[in-house]
Length: 465
Image (cartoon, rainbow, N blue to C red):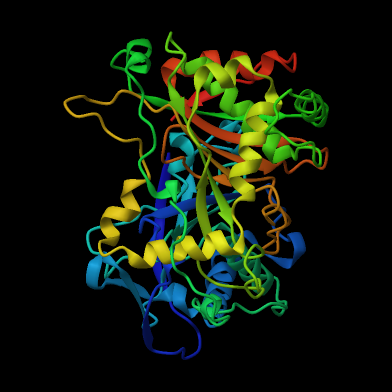
Protein backbone atom coordinates (compact mmCIF):
# COMPACT_ATOMS: atom_id res chain seq x y z
CA UNK A 1 0.00 0.00 0.00
CA UNK A 2 1.19 3.51 -0.85
CA UNK A 3 0.67 6.50 1.45
CA UNK A 4 0.91 10.09 0.21
CA UNK A 5 2.98 12.14 2.69
CA UNK A 6 3.01 15.56 1.02
CA UNK A 7 1.83 17.42 -2.07
CA UNK A 8 3.43 20.60 -3.38
CA UNK A 9 3.05 22.83 -6.42
CA UNK A 10 6.40 23.58 -8.02
CA UNK A 11 6.78 26.70 -10.16
CA UNK A 12 9.74 27.96 -12.24
CA UNK A 13 12.42 29.53 -10.05
CA UNK A 14 12.75 32.46 -12.47
CA UNK A 15 10.19 34.60 -14.33
CA UNK A 16 8.97 32.94 -17.55
CA UNK A 17 6.98 34.26 -20.54
CA UNK A 18 3.26 34.84 -20.03
CA UNK A 19 1.74 33.80 -23.34
CA UNK A 20 -0.98 31.75 -24.97
CA UNK A 21 -1.07 29.92 -28.28
CA UNK A 22 -3.01 27.29 -30.18
CA UNK A 23 -1.43 23.85 -30.15
CA UNK A 24 -0.24 22.40 -33.46
CA UNK A 25 -2.00 19.71 -35.47
CA UNK A 26 0.47 17.17 -34.02
CA UNK A 27 -0.87 18.06 -30.55
CA UNK A 28 -4.54 18.51 -31.40
CA UNK A 29 -4.99 14.87 -32.43
CA UNK A 30 -3.95 13.63 -28.99
CA UNK A 31 -6.24 12.92 -26.07
CA UNK A 32 -5.77 15.30 -23.14
CA UNK A 33 -5.36 12.63 -20.47
CA UNK A 34 -1.96 11.65 -19.07
CA UNK A 35 0.57 8.94 -19.85
CA UNK A 36 2.56 7.56 -16.91
CA UNK A 37 6.22 6.57 -16.76
CA UNK A 38 7.96 4.85 -13.85
CA UNK A 39 11.68 4.93 -13.01
CA UNK A 40 12.89 2.51 -10.30
CA UNK A 41 16.15 2.85 -8.36
CA UNK A 42 17.94 0.42 -6.08
CA UNK A 43 18.38 1.18 -2.37
CA UNK A 44 21.25 3.56 -1.75
CA UNK A 45 23.52 4.10 1.24
CA UNK A 46 22.67 7.23 3.20
CA UNK A 47 25.79 8.98 1.94
CA UNK A 48 25.68 7.56 -1.59
CA UNK A 49 27.05 10.08 -4.06
CA UNK A 50 26.62 12.85 -1.50
CA UNK A 51 22.82 12.65 -1.49
CA UNK A 52 21.16 11.75 1.83
CA UNK A 53 17.83 9.95 1.61
CA UNK A 54 16.12 12.69 3.61
CA UNK A 55 17.19 15.27 1.00
CA UNK A 56 15.93 13.41 -2.06
CA UNK A 57 12.60 15.25 -2.24
CA UNK A 58 14.42 18.56 -1.82
CA UNK A 59 16.79 17.72 -4.69
CA UNK A 60 13.83 16.77 -6.88
CA UNK A 61 11.88 19.92 -6.00
CA UNK A 62 14.75 22.34 -6.57
CA UNK A 63 15.91 20.77 -9.83
CA UNK A 64 12.32 20.57 -11.11
CA UNK A 65 11.91 24.28 -10.38
CA UNK A 66 15.08 24.90 -12.40
CA UNK A 67 13.92 22.71 -15.27
CA UNK A 68 10.62 24.57 -15.52
CA UNK A 69 12.43 27.72 -16.61
CA UNK A 70 13.45 26.45 -20.08
CA UNK A 71 10.52 24.01 -20.08
CA UNK A 72 7.99 26.62 -18.92
CA UNK A 73 5.11 25.36 -21.13
CA UNK A 74 4.83 22.37 -18.78
CA UNK A 75 3.82 24.73 -15.96
CA UNK A 76 0.93 26.10 -18.04
CA UNK A 77 -2.68 25.00 -18.41
CA UNK A 78 -4.89 23.90 -21.29
CA UNK A 79 -7.99 25.80 -22.40
CA UNK A 80 -10.65 24.97 -24.97
CA UNK A 81 -10.82 26.86 -28.23
CA UNK A 82 -13.19 26.79 -31.21
CA UNK A 83 -14.05 23.42 -32.75
CA UNK A 84 -12.85 21.40 -29.77
CA UNK A 85 -9.26 22.56 -30.27
CA UNK A 86 -6.83 23.18 -27.43
CA UNK A 87 -4.85 26.27 -26.46
CA UNK A 88 -1.90 26.38 -24.08
CA UNK A 89 -1.83 29.24 -21.56
CA UNK A 90 1.65 29.70 -20.12
CA UNK A 91 1.08 31.41 -16.76
CA UNK A 92 3.51 29.48 -14.54
CA UNK A 93 0.74 27.80 -12.54
CA UNK A 94 3.17 25.01 -11.79
CA UNK A 95 3.36 21.23 -11.67
CA UNK A 96 2.40 18.86 -8.86
CA UNK A 97 5.10 17.04 -6.85
CA UNK A 98 3.98 14.29 -4.47
CA UNK A 99 6.02 12.47 -1.83
CA UNK A 100 4.89 8.97 -0.83
CA UNK A 101 5.92 5.89 1.13
CA UNK A 102 5.24 2.27 0.17
CA UNK A 103 4.90 -0.63 2.59
CA UNK A 104 6.30 -2.94 -0.08
CA UNK A 105 9.73 -3.58 -1.58
CA UNK A 106 11.06 -3.51 -5.12
CA UNK A 107 11.17 -7.30 -5.05
CA UNK A 108 7.40 -7.38 -4.53
CA UNK A 109 6.93 -5.92 -8.02
CA UNK A 110 8.60 -8.95 -9.63
CA UNK A 111 8.93 -8.31 -13.39
CA UNK A 112 7.38 -4.78 -13.24
CA UNK A 113 4.37 -5.73 -15.37
CA UNK A 114 2.01 -2.70 -15.42
CA UNK A 115 -0.43 -4.03 -12.82
CA UNK A 116 -2.51 -2.31 -10.14
CA UNK A 117 0.56 -2.24 -7.86
CA UNK A 118 2.34 -0.01 -10.37
CA UNK A 119 -0.69 2.26 -10.80
CA UNK A 120 -0.35 3.24 -7.13
CA UNK A 121 3.09 4.62 -7.92
CA UNK A 122 1.76 7.05 -10.53
CA UNK A 123 0.27 10.44 -9.60
CA UNK A 124 -3.51 10.54 -9.51
CA UNK A 125 -4.89 13.21 -11.85
CA UNK A 126 -8.05 15.22 -11.14
CA UNK A 127 -9.85 15.66 -14.47
CA UNK A 128 -12.63 17.81 -13.03
CA UNK A 129 -11.54 20.94 -14.93
CA UNK A 130 -9.13 21.00 -17.83
CA UNK A 131 -8.27 24.64 -17.07
CA UNK A 132 -7.00 23.69 -13.61
CA UNK A 133 -5.45 20.33 -14.51
CA UNK A 134 -1.65 20.16 -14.10
CA UNK A 135 0.09 19.12 -17.30
CA UNK A 136 2.88 17.42 -15.37
CA UNK A 137 2.67 15.49 -12.11
CA UNK A 138 5.50 13.67 -10.32
CA UNK A 139 5.34 11.18 -7.46
CA UNK A 140 8.46 10.19 -5.54
CA UNK A 141 7.84 6.94 -3.64
CA UNK A 142 10.21 5.41 -1.08
CA UNK A 143 9.99 1.65 -0.56
CA UNK A 144 10.48 -0.14 2.74
CA UNK A 145 13.70 -1.64 1.33
CA UNK A 146 15.13 1.82 0.63
CA UNK A 147 14.46 1.75 -3.11
CA UNK A 148 12.93 4.69 -4.93
CA UNK A 149 10.40 5.18 -7.70
CA UNK A 150 9.93 8.36 -9.70
CA UNK A 151 6.47 8.31 -11.29
CA UNK A 152 5.89 10.88 -14.03
CA UNK A 153 2.45 11.67 -15.50
CA UNK A 154 2.46 14.04 -18.49
CA UNK A 155 -0.47 15.26 -20.57
CA UNK A 156 -0.54 13.55 -23.98
CA UNK A 157 -1.64 16.74 -25.73
CA UNK A 158 1.55 18.55 -24.64
CA UNK A 159 4.42 16.09 -25.12
CA UNK A 160 4.99 12.82 -26.96
CA UNK A 161 7.35 10.11 -25.79
CA UNK A 162 10.46 11.59 -27.38
CA UNK A 163 9.88 15.02 -25.83
CA UNK A 164 8.94 13.52 -22.45
CA UNK A 165 12.07 11.38 -22.24
CA UNK A 166 14.12 14.42 -23.29
CA UNK A 167 12.59 16.53 -20.52
CA UNK A 168 13.13 13.90 -17.80
CA UNK A 169 16.74 13.43 -18.93
CA UNK A 170 17.33 17.19 -18.75
CA UNK A 171 15.68 17.41 -15.34
CA UNK A 172 17.92 14.59 -14.06
CA UNK A 173 20.97 16.42 -15.40
CA UNK A 174 20.05 19.53 -13.43
CA UNK A 175 19.49 17.37 -10.34
CA UNK A 176 23.11 16.21 -10.67
CA UNK A 177 24.28 19.82 -10.74
CA UNK A 178 25.16 19.84 -14.45
CA UNK A 179 24.18 22.28 -17.20
CA UNK A 180 21.89 21.43 -20.09
CA UNK A 181 23.62 20.77 -23.41
CA UNK A 182 20.36 20.82 -25.43
CA UNK A 183 17.67 23.39 -24.69
CA UNK A 184 14.05 22.75 -25.63
CA UNK A 185 12.90 24.12 -28.99
CA UNK A 186 9.54 25.73 -28.31
CA UNK A 187 8.17 26.70 -31.74
CA UNK A 188 5.53 24.03 -32.36
CA UNK A 189 4.82 25.35 -35.87
CA UNK A 190 8.39 25.36 -37.16
CA UNK A 191 7.42 22.63 -39.66
CA UNK A 192 5.32 25.23 -41.46
CA UNK A 193 8.33 27.47 -42.11
CA UNK A 194 9.42 25.43 -45.14
CA UNK A 195 6.48 26.83 -47.06
CA UNK A 196 5.38 23.38 -48.17
CA UNK A 197 1.66 22.85 -48.52
CA UNK A 198 -0.22 20.79 -45.98
CA UNK A 199 -3.18 19.89 -48.16
CA UNK A 200 -4.62 16.39 -47.62
CA UNK A 201 -3.86 14.34 -50.70
CA UNK A 202 -4.19 10.81 -49.25
CA UNK A 203 -7.13 8.88 -47.86
CA UNK A 204 -5.65 8.63 -44.33
CA UNK A 205 -7.13 5.38 -43.10
CA UNK A 206 -5.24 5.90 -39.83
CA UNK A 207 -7.96 8.33 -38.71
CA UNK A 208 -10.84 6.00 -39.52
CA UNK A 209 -12.49 3.46 -37.26
CA UNK A 210 -10.56 0.25 -36.73
CA UNK A 211 -12.20 -3.12 -37.52
CA UNK A 212 -14.36 -4.70 -34.87
CA UNK A 213 -14.79 -8.41 -34.32
CA UNK A 214 -17.43 -10.34 -36.23
CA UNK A 215 -18.74 -11.83 -33.02
CA UNK A 216 -16.59 -14.88 -32.45
CA UNK A 217 -14.25 -13.11 -30.02
CA UNK A 218 -17.16 -12.58 -27.67
CA UNK A 219 -18.10 -16.24 -27.78
CA UNK A 220 -14.57 -17.17 -26.76
CA UNK A 221 -14.27 -14.60 -23.99
CA UNK A 222 -17.86 -14.91 -22.81
CA UNK A 223 -18.91 -11.85 -20.86
CA UNK A 224 -15.51 -11.49 -19.20
CA UNK A 225 -14.04 -8.27 -20.56
CA UNK A 226 -11.26 -8.14 -18.00
CA UNK A 227 -7.84 -7.33 -19.40
CA UNK A 228 -4.56 -8.40 -17.88
CA UNK A 229 -1.01 -7.25 -18.39
CA UNK A 230 2.11 -9.32 -18.86
CA UNK A 231 5.79 -8.57 -19.29
CA UNK A 232 7.17 -10.45 -22.28
CA UNK A 233 10.92 -11.10 -22.24
CA UNK A 234 12.85 -11.87 -25.40
CA UNK A 235 16.52 -12.80 -25.11
CA UNK A 236 19.12 -11.95 -27.72
CA UNK A 237 19.17 -15.59 -28.83
CA UNK A 238 15.38 -15.66 -29.17
CA UNK A 239 15.48 -12.41 -31.10
CA UNK A 240 18.03 -13.84 -33.52
CA UNK A 241 15.85 -16.90 -34.02
CA UNK A 242 12.83 -14.76 -34.83
CA UNK A 243 14.85 -12.67 -37.27
CA UNK A 244 16.06 -15.83 -38.96
CA UNK A 245 12.46 -17.05 -39.27
CA UNK A 246 11.43 -13.71 -40.76
CA UNK A 247 14.28 -13.94 -43.26
CA UNK A 248 12.61 -16.83 -45.03
CA UNK A 249 11.82 -15.79 -48.59
CA UNK A 250 8.10 -15.66 -49.16
CA UNK A 251 6.89 -16.24 -52.70
CA UNK A 252 4.88 -13.07 -53.17
CA UNK A 253 5.32 -10.82 -56.17
CA UNK A 254 4.52 -7.76 -54.02
CA UNK A 255 7.39 -8.47 -51.65
CA UNK A 256 10.71 -7.19 -52.89
CA UNK A 257 13.87 -8.39 -51.18
CA UNK A 258 15.41 -5.43 -49.33
CA UNK A 259 17.33 -4.98 -46.09
CA UNK A 260 16.82 -7.58 -43.34
CA UNK A 261 13.84 -6.98 -41.11
CA UNK A 262 14.49 -4.90 -38.00
CA UNK A 263 13.88 -6.12 -34.47
CA UNK A 264 10.80 -3.89 -34.25
CA UNK A 265 9.35 -5.23 -37.50
CA UNK A 266 9.93 -8.84 -36.48
CA UNK A 267 8.62 -8.48 -32.93
CA UNK A 268 5.55 -6.54 -34.06
CA UNK A 269 4.79 -9.20 -36.66
CA UNK A 270 5.27 -12.01 -34.13
CA UNK A 271 2.98 -10.34 -31.57
CA UNK A 272 0.37 -9.74 -34.30
CA UNK A 273 0.34 -13.36 -35.48
CA UNK A 274 0.24 -14.76 -31.94
CA UNK A 275 -2.60 -12.41 -30.98
CA UNK A 276 -4.57 -13.60 -34.02
CA UNK A 277 -4.01 -17.21 -33.01
CA UNK A 278 -5.06 -16.52 -29.42
CA UNK A 279 -8.17 -14.57 -30.46
CA UNK A 280 -9.16 -16.98 -33.24
CA UNK A 281 -12.31 -19.01 -32.80
CA UNK A 282 -13.42 -20.11 -36.24
CA UNK A 283 -13.73 -17.04 -38.50
CA UNK A 284 -10.89 -17.16 -41.02
CA UNK A 285 -12.02 -13.86 -42.54
CA UNK A 286 -11.89 -11.73 -39.38
CA UNK A 287 -10.16 -8.45 -40.35
CA UNK A 288 -7.39 -7.05 -38.18
CA UNK A 289 -5.02 -4.08 -38.31
CA UNK A 290 -1.97 -2.86 -36.45
CA UNK A 291 -1.67 0.78 -35.45
CA UNK A 292 1.90 2.05 -35.01
CA UNK A 293 2.86 5.45 -33.61
CA UNK A 294 5.68 6.89 -35.75
CA UNK A 295 8.08 9.67 -34.75
CA UNK A 296 8.02 12.22 -37.59
CA UNK A 297 10.93 14.39 -36.43
CA UNK A 298 13.53 12.99 -38.81
CA UNK A 299 11.02 11.96 -41.47
CA UNK A 300 10.09 15.53 -42.30
CA UNK A 301 12.14 17.58 -44.75
CA UNK A 302 13.74 19.57 -43.27
CA UNK A 303 13.84 17.55 -40.02
CA UNK A 304 12.47 19.12 -36.87
CA UNK A 305 15.14 20.80 -34.70
CA UNK A 306 16.85 18.93 -31.88
CA UNK A 307 14.97 19.37 -28.62
CA UNK A 308 11.62 20.00 -30.33
CA UNK A 309 9.20 20.26 -27.40
CA UNK A 310 5.76 18.95 -28.26
CA UNK A 311 4.09 16.14 -30.13
CA UNK A 312 5.64 15.06 -33.41
CA UNK A 313 4.23 11.55 -33.69
CA UNK A 314 1.39 10.36 -35.88
CA UNK A 315 -0.36 7.02 -36.22
CA UNK A 316 0.05 4.76 -39.21
CA UNK A 317 -1.95 1.60 -39.81
CA UNK A 318 -1.58 -1.53 -41.85
CA UNK A 319 -4.39 -2.25 -44.30
CA UNK A 320 -6.92 -4.74 -42.87
CA UNK A 321 -5.75 -8.34 -43.26
CA UNK A 322 -7.67 -11.46 -42.35
CA UNK A 323 -6.69 -13.85 -39.59
CA UNK A 324 -6.26 -16.74 -42.03
CA UNK A 325 -3.49 -15.01 -44.00
CA UNK A 326 -1.59 -13.88 -40.93
CA UNK A 327 -1.81 -17.27 -39.23
CA UNK A 328 -1.14 -19.50 -42.25
CA UNK A 329 1.59 -17.49 -43.96
CA UNK A 330 5.16 -17.21 -42.63
CA UNK A 331 6.38 -14.52 -40.26
CA UNK A 332 7.90 -12.46 -43.07
CA UNK A 333 4.40 -11.82 -44.47
CA UNK A 334 3.31 -9.96 -41.33
CA UNK A 335 6.72 -8.28 -40.96
CA UNK A 336 6.44 -6.96 -44.51
CA UNK A 337 3.03 -5.43 -43.75
CA UNK A 338 4.48 -3.70 -40.68
CA UNK A 339 7.34 -2.32 -42.77
CA UNK A 340 5.00 -1.01 -45.47
CA UNK A 341 2.89 0.82 -42.87
CA UNK A 342 5.93 2.57 -41.40
CA UNK A 343 7.64 3.31 -44.72
CA UNK A 344 4.67 5.23 -46.09
CA UNK A 345 5.30 7.93 -43.47
CA UNK A 346 7.22 10.25 -45.81
CA UNK A 347 7.40 14.03 -45.60
CA UNK A 348 4.64 14.29 -48.19
CA UNK A 349 2.37 11.85 -46.34
CA UNK A 350 3.00 13.49 -42.95
CA UNK A 351 2.14 16.95 -44.30
CA UNK A 352 -0.97 15.54 -45.92
CA UNK A 353 -1.98 14.07 -42.55
CA UNK A 354 -1.43 17.42 -40.84
CA UNK A 355 -3.57 19.04 -43.51
CA UNK A 356 -6.25 16.43 -42.92
CA UNK A 357 -6.25 17.20 -39.20
CA UNK A 358 -6.39 20.96 -39.86
CA UNK A 359 -9.35 20.55 -42.21
CA UNK A 360 -11.54 18.93 -39.55
CA UNK A 361 -14.04 21.29 -37.96
CA UNK A 362 -14.74 19.11 -34.90
CA UNK A 363 -11.53 17.98 -33.25
CA UNK A 364 -13.38 16.22 -30.43
CA UNK A 365 -14.82 13.73 -32.91
CA UNK A 366 -11.54 13.22 -34.77
CA UNK A 367 -9.31 12.64 -31.75
CA UNK A 368 -11.58 9.91 -30.42
CA UNK A 369 -12.82 8.33 -33.67
CA UNK A 370 -9.74 6.24 -34.46
CA UNK A 371 -8.80 5.25 -30.91
CA UNK A 372 -11.14 2.23 -30.66
CA UNK A 373 -12.72 -0.32 -33.03
CA UNK A 374 -15.93 0.64 -34.80
CA UNK A 375 -19.03 -0.31 -32.87
CA UNK A 376 -21.74 -2.53 -34.25
CA UNK A 377 -25.25 -1.14 -33.97
CA UNK A 378 -27.34 -2.95 -31.39
CA UNK A 379 -24.39 -4.89 -29.95
CA UNK A 380 -22.23 -4.65 -26.87
CA UNK A 381 -18.46 -5.14 -26.70
CA UNK A 382 -17.59 -7.80 -29.28
CA UNK A 383 -13.87 -7.69 -28.72
CA UNK A 384 -10.88 -6.03 -30.29
CA UNK A 385 -9.09 -7.82 -33.16
CA UNK A 386 -6.44 -5.08 -33.55
CA UNK A 387 -3.13 -4.09 -31.96
CA UNK A 388 -1.52 -0.80 -31.00
CA UNK A 389 2.28 -1.06 -30.88
CA UNK A 390 4.66 1.61 -29.56
CA UNK A 391 8.44 1.47 -29.93
CA UNK A 392 10.67 2.81 -27.16
CA UNK A 393 13.69 0.91 -28.47
CA UNK A 394 15.78 3.98 -29.29
CA UNK A 395 14.66 6.13 -26.38
CA UNK A 396 17.09 7.22 -23.61
CA UNK A 397 15.02 5.39 -21.02
CA UNK A 398 17.78 3.75 -18.98
CA UNK A 399 20.27 6.56 -18.36
CA UNK A 400 18.08 8.89 -16.24
CA UNK A 401 20.32 9.49 -13.24
CA UNK A 402 19.06 12.03 -10.67
CA UNK A 403 22.21 11.60 -8.60
CA UNK A 404 21.68 8.13 -7.14
CA UNK A 405 22.53 5.99 -10.14
CA UNK A 406 20.76 4.77 -13.24
CA UNK A 407 17.36 3.10 -12.95
CA UNK A 408 17.10 -0.66 -12.53
CA UNK A 409 13.91 -0.56 -14.58
CA UNK A 410 11.88 1.98 -16.52
CA UNK A 411 8.52 1.39 -18.18
CA UNK A 412 4.87 2.44 -18.44
CA UNK A 413 2.91 2.81 -15.22
CA UNK A 414 -0.21 1.43 -16.89
CA UNK A 415 -1.54 0.33 -20.26
CA UNK A 416 -4.77 2.09 -21.08
CA UNK A 417 -6.12 -0.17 -23.80
CA UNK A 418 -6.42 -3.87 -24.60
CA UNK A 419 -4.18 -4.96 -27.46
CA UNK A 420 -1.45 -2.38 -26.71
CA UNK A 421 2.24 -3.23 -26.48
CA UNK A 422 5.44 -1.30 -25.76
CA UNK A 423 8.64 -2.66 -27.27
CA UNK A 424 11.76 -1.49 -25.44
CA UNK A 425 15.34 -2.50 -24.85
CA UNK A 426 15.98 -4.17 -21.52
CA UNK A 427 17.99 -2.44 -18.80
CA UNK A 428 20.42 -5.37 -18.94
CA UNK A 429 23.20 -4.91 -21.46
CA UNK A 430 22.59 -8.32 -23.04
CA UNK A 431 20.58 -7.47 -26.14
CA UNK A 432 17.29 -8.60 -24.60
CA UNK A 433 13.91 -6.94 -25.16
CA UNK A 434 11.10 -6.21 -22.68
CA UNK A 435 7.50 -5.90 -23.91
CA UNK A 436 4.73 -4.78 -21.55
CA UNK A 437 1.53 -6.05 -23.21
CA UNK A 438 -2.19 -5.96 -22.42
CA UNK A 439 -4.76 -8.49 -23.64
CA UNK A 440 -8.10 -9.90 -22.56
CA UNK A 441 -7.76 -12.43 -19.77
CA UNK A 442 -9.58 -15.04 -21.84
CA UNK A 443 -6.89 -14.88 -24.52
CA UNK A 444 -3.69 -14.40 -22.51
CA UNK A 445 -2.82 -18.04 -21.75
CA UNK A 446 -3.12 -18.97 -25.42
CA UNK A 447 -1.15 -15.92 -26.48
CA UNK A 448 1.74 -16.74 -24.12
CA UNK A 449 1.81 -20.32 -25.41
CA UNK A 450 1.97 -19.22 -29.05
CA UNK A 451 4.46 -16.42 -28.35
CA UNK A 452 7.10 -18.74 -26.90
CA UNK A 453 6.20 -21.84 -28.88
CA UNK A 454 8.23 -20.88 -31.96
CA UNK A 455 11.26 -19.88 -29.94
CA UNK A 456 11.05 -22.95 -27.71
CA UNK A 457 10.92 -21.21 -24.35
CA UNK A 458 8.79 -21.60 -21.24
CA UNK A 459 6.42 -18.61 -20.88
CA UNK A 460 7.08 -16.04 -18.20
CA UNK A 461 4.35 -15.42 -15.61
CA UNK A 462 1.99 -12.50 -16.00
CA UNK A 463 -0.17 -10.51 -13.61
CA UNK A 464 -3.70 -9.14 -13.58
CA UNK A 465 -4.19 -5.39 -13.86
